[in-house]
Length: 59
View 1: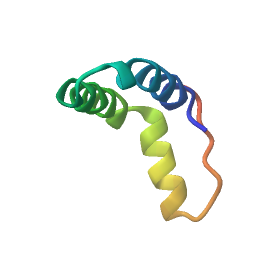
View 2 (view 1 turned 90 degrees about the vertical axis):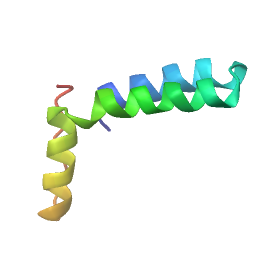
View 3 (view 1 turned 180 degrees about the vertical axis):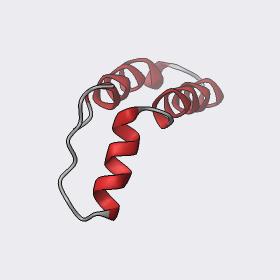
View 4 (view 1 turned 90 degrees about the horizontal axis):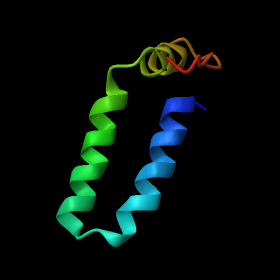
């Protein structure tokens, strides 16, 4: 699994439950935006298209 995504998931889950819904959704949205344009996201999509196991680097 991509290291940046795992870290982001853990942070969001740790912070989110105590926030009002709108703030929690905003936190989730920010995490999505930060992760969307990463090398690991590109690798994951390419591996899916090529039907192979992804090689995540944490970038």
